[in-house]
Length: 179
Image (tube, rainbow, N blue to C red; front, side, top):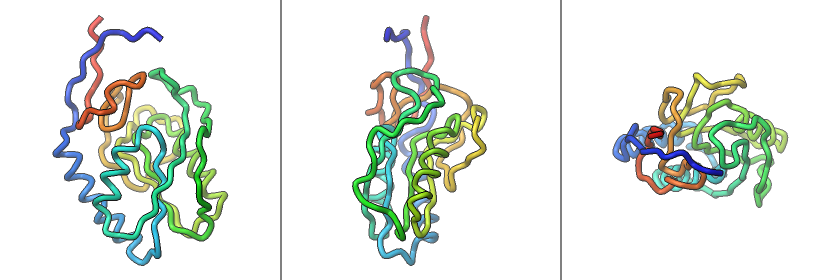
């Protein structure tokens, strides 16, 4: 795939992300304060930085697992077909689960994953997304917690990529094509 030339303009600073994660973790703690152990399920690959910062901030016993689901490939548009590329290593039946997503765009991926995991009978399951783009929603699904609601812009950084680039940015940036 040939990439169009682009630049990245900062949209959400690293400082704003850290402050929002701290606030979200207080709410998550209140919801799960009675848990024996919270299974935090990160949706790879985009959520890996977000999940790392979340679990470091959570004052709860946690177990981390990952599920890789994809509806994008290397493109900018969702294919709307959700594929599970890597499943959980541990069972979640009867356990408390927090599903962590980087961005809810069309809603297909998170809706599919939550439905799949619900069928495995967790005791309690909630979802969190760092970013929510409601203008693009095609599936009636909203995460239980959202870091930031953003306009319909293509974004990168803080784990989110464009064709495997820019995941390592410490902020969320808007992609601006220069051609």
